Amino acid sequence: MESDPATRGYKRILLKLSGEALMGSGQFGIETRVVEEIGAQIKETKDLGTEIAIVLGGGNIFRGLNASERGMDRVTADNMGMLATVINSLALMDSLEKMGVFTRVMSAVNIEAFAEPYIRRRAVRHMEKGRLVILAAGTGNPYFSTDTAAALRTSELSAEIMIKATTVDGVYSADPKKFPDAVFHPRLSHMDVLTRELKVMDATAVSLLKDNRTPVRVIDINTPGNLRRVVSGEEVGTLIS
Figure 1 (tube, rainbow, N blue to C red):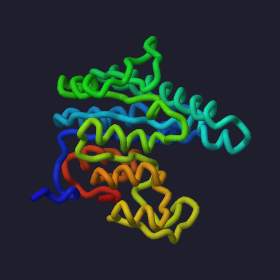
Figure 2 (cartoon, helix red, strand yellow):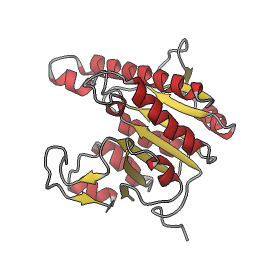
Figure 3 (cartoon, rainbow, N blue to C red):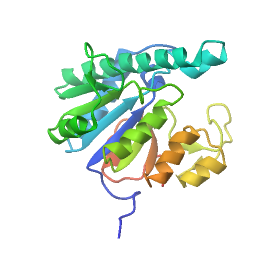
C-alpha cells in the first residue's frame, strides 16, 4: 500500500519557487539577501540527501499575462516572461554555488551561452550525480504558466512531490493578505482546488497534477526550515493530493 503523502519523507522533489519570493520587501526585482536565505534552505534540504529540481517563476521581473492584458502580443509577452525566469535561475545558481552546491541551469529554450538545453535524461542524471538542477524558461511555449511547467517536470523527472514555495503559509479560501477572515485549508484534493476555483495555481497545472496523481505541498518559503520539514515528512502548509 502506498504511504500517506502527508507523513512520509521524500528522496526526489520538484520545488516550484515563485519569482515574487525573490523580491523580499521590494516591489520589483531580486533582493540578494532573500536569495541567499532561500538558497540556505535549499542547501540544508539537499544535505539530507534529497535530489532537487527547481522551477522558478519570473513575476518579480516580468509577467507575460499581465502585459498581454495591457495590449502586448501574448506570445511576445510570454517569451519575455520566460527570459525573466532565466534571470532568476542564474541568480539562484550563483547563490547556491557560493555555498558549495553543484548546480546546473537547464533551459527549455535554446540559450546555450547561459544554460544547458533541457533534456529529461540529462536532468535525471545530474540529480543522480548529486547536482541540483534549476529548470528555466517554463515549458518553452507561450500560453503555459511556470506552475504548469513545474507540474510537467515533476512527472517527467519522477519526483515524488511538487513543493510550491510562496510567500503565504498555505492555501486559503481567499487572499489572506487582503481578507483577514480567509479560511486556511490544511488539506485539499486536486478536484477541490478546481471546483472551488482556489487561486493557488492555474487549472492546467492542477489538472496535470491530478491526472498523474501527484501530491503538492504549498508552503511559505520565508519561514526558515520549512523546506527541510516537508522533505522530512512533517506536515507544513497545505497538502493537495
